[in-house]
Image (cartoon, rainbow, N blue to C red; front, side, top):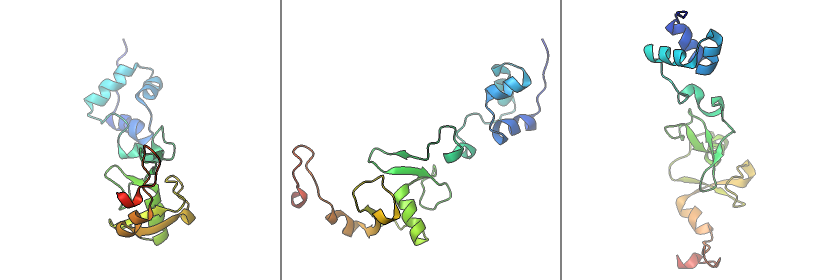
Length: 152
């Protein structure tokens, strides 16, 4: 069996710098996958694609964002002050922030004029506050479909 020596810097550059998978590195070296894995462990090189280099558009499965359970589009912008610790931000808040040229304050809300939470065109968005935003919405009963705005 042939002995192979892999330099830590070379392996780290291939894995994190060039974004090669363990399988691709193994193929390049003509060794099995377990050998590459063992060297990553030996050199204490972080494994997995959860680092910042693989977030958002750099992630292999990136599709430009996703729609959350409430119907809002979530995008990735790690540098934006309104984004969460994982770099996620609601797209309508990002669009309004770009229109204003500043981050949104916590009390500011963005209203979708046509009611479609995934429609984040500038002309469909307007800046409002919590006190002004909620009264402008109708509350529809999920059971019968009746407008119960005044009763809630």
